[in-house]
Image (cartoon, rainbow, N blue to C red):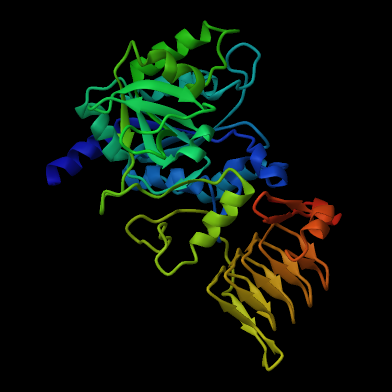
Length: 421
């Protein structure tokens, strides 16, 4: 075991991680109208980007670049505030890499192009391996284990993969592998995904995580760049399908190291999946344990007072049941059930909040009844508002998802967006 740890540690020190955080996240509707998807709040006090970044630090990868583009102000500010604790004198960093037209006059035109435009920065760090990560998924993963598998299999490229129901697989890159987990077929977002042989109803999909031996990465990015007009310059659509017959491309199944079952991994790219993944955290023993001190999730820590629950009258009692409530919240003579409240939320007297995710700095007025909602940062919910009881009425004012989750933003209420989304 000690030898394995030293082996993995050596690999992580020779690895540069690049987090792709420039995505628009259009399926999240107005939640990403003024922020990039990786900057969307998650889990009561975090942002989605904190999960891949924390995985890097906890895995021993101290050199991380974050590639940004779309509406990146709140994301950049969050990283500057919360991720400046690494030791520069030890060559540790989380470095922002915004689109700068470093090659010709184009902005980032795809995931592969975003990395290509930073080849000079990659060269300057001289890594032996480059770890490419999506910045918009929620999970805990030791990347050192994947790096070790990459080396042991003598792979040129290793793709992190996970099993999902076939009906969900068309949103991902779907692969087929041989008995040695070498990828023999890869299709990005197919209309009719193939099931895993012997596992009907289940498909093997890409997690958007790639380990490249550095020379291979450079060669393939430059090859793809020359295909201008014939390539969308995307890892999943272009790079991986083009190399599986020429190079040794391995799959790395992501499994829980304790029970060897399929590990927790969530693509929170829709209102429904974001709502569900947040409320899953409330369970007694959730799959994603935010209280695990062995694998902490790092973030920007606001200096806030504890949450407060006031009034204990028969008809006005401040309570929260089966809920998570962050610092700075005040539940004043109101009832919160099976909900997640981010920091500095105010819920006023006689109101009820149920099955809802409330982002920071929301004020819910008196006598409001909120059910099955996601309320964006800074909303001021007027007194007497009812949400989640009449779909037709909700659709006239707000966005209602296919599964009935109501999204409320300041703009929908005729209010200004707050600074610091």
